[in-house]
Image (cartoon, rainbow over all chains, first blue to last red; front, side):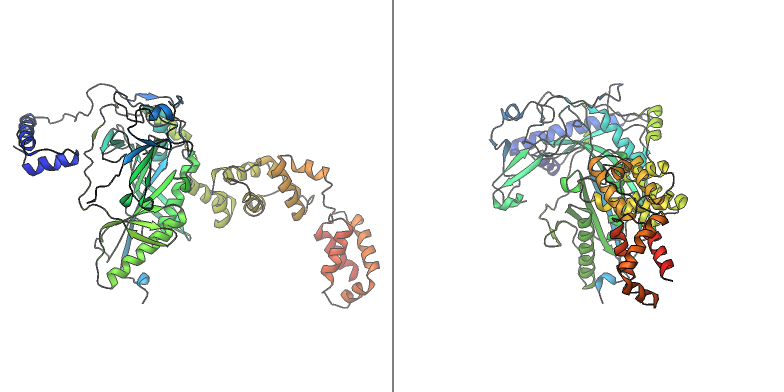
Length: 98
Length: 487
C-alpha cells in the first residue's frame, strides 16, 4: 500500500510546505513506508477494542473559572516580528490566486 | 406571478449559531473574557500559542455547555473529546482551533418555536464547545481582505469559550428561522450562560438555505454576516426570493457562500476557493476526555430553569393570560420572575391586572432604561403594592403611572411615595359631592344642557370636578355622581 505523488503534493499544500522535486521523491518513499507499516498493524484483530485517542487513564481535568492577570500588551508584543497600534501586524492573508 | 409565492418550490433552512459563554475566563487559560478594551491586553502565552504552553479546560464553560445541551433536549455524551481543527489563518496564533468533532458534548436535541400561533419543532444536530478566534483588521484596499495590503491581529477574543449549536435542516421559512434564533437566544438568556448580544458578536447566526421542488435537493447557499434577528429574517427572505427567481427563470443556483449587506438589503457572493477545506481534524493530545459524572448531570438537571416557551404556555393555561401578554412576560427571565413575584405578593390584584401593568406601563417605562427588561429596577413586592393600590381604589391609573415612574427612579415603596406627595384617589361620595355641587352651581348653563339630553359638555364637567379635587377624585365615582345629580 503506497501513496501517490499527487497525494504527497496535496498534503504538502495543506501544510503550506514548498517542497523540491527531490524532497517530493524522498517523502513519497518515506510516507509509503509509514503507511505500509500502518497496514500491517491494521491486520490485527481489534474486534471489541475501543479506539484510543488518549493513552493516559485520565479524564475531566478542569480548572476553576478564576482570572489569572494577563501579561499585558507590551509583553505580548515583545517578540512580534511586526506590530502596529498594539496589534500584531501580519502580511497580506490571501494569495493572489484565492 | 410573484416567484416568492410559487407553491411548487420548497425552502429548506438550517442554522448554525455561535454563542460566547459568559465565563470569567477564557476556555483554556485564565485570561479574562470581555468585549472591547485595548488590543492584546487580555492575552497570555497560552492563548498566544507560545511553544511549550498547555491548555486546561475551564470547568464553568463545560458546565454551561452541558446546560445548553440539556435545555435543547440533547443526549449528553458520556464521553466527549476535543479535536484540533487545523487551518492557516492568523486569527488563531496556534494555527489550529481547539474544537470538537465526532464526540461533541450534546447531540440529537430539538427546539420548539411558535410563529403566529403555530408550533414548529426544529431538530438540533449538535451542541459543541470550542474556542473563539481573535479579530483581524484588514488595512488598505478599503478594509476588505481581498484587496488589503496587510492585516492587524488582536487576540483579546482568542480563546473565549464558544458554543456552536447546529440545527437540522428542518426550517421551512425565514419567519421560522427568525423564531428559532429568537427562541434560542431567549433560552440562553434564561440559562444565564451568555450575554447573547448579536450587535457585539456574543451571538452569531449563519444560515444554509436552499430552494428546490418537493423531494429534490437544492444547492446549498451559506449566508453570513447577519448581525441582528431582523437581519436574519431579511437576509433569508432576500435569499429565498433570489433562488426562486433563478429557478423560475430556468437557471440553476450555485453552491456558494454569500455575505448579507444590511445597508443594501441584499446578499453578495463571496470569492471563495473551489477546493473543499481539509481541516485535518485529530484528537487534541494536550487535553483529556470529558466523562461527566451521573450525579453531576443530575444536579445540573435540577438547576435547569423553566424554559421560556413552557413559561408562556403555563401563563396562558393556568393564569388565563392572552398569548400576547404571555409572550411579553416571558421575553426575558427577569421580567417573568418580576411578574411572578408581584403576583405572589399581591393581595387584591389578580394575574390579569398584574400582567397589564407589566406589559403596558412598565414596558414603556423600561424602554428608556438600558437593558431595562433584562434587569428591571423594581422589586416584585413594590409592583404588587402599586397594583394593589389601584385595585383597591387608592390610586387612579394615571396617578399610579406617576408613582410607578418615581418608584423606578428611587427604588422607594409606592405607598411611601404616594403618601409623601399627597397622591391619592378620593372615592368618598360625601367629599366628592361638595365639589360637584360647587361646579354645577358655577356652570348652570352646562348643567341645563345636560339635563335636556345634550351629552357633549359631560367631559367638561368631569374635567372641572377633577380640577377642583386636584386630580384626586375617583373618575368612576365622580361620573356616577354627576349623572345622578342631573337626572
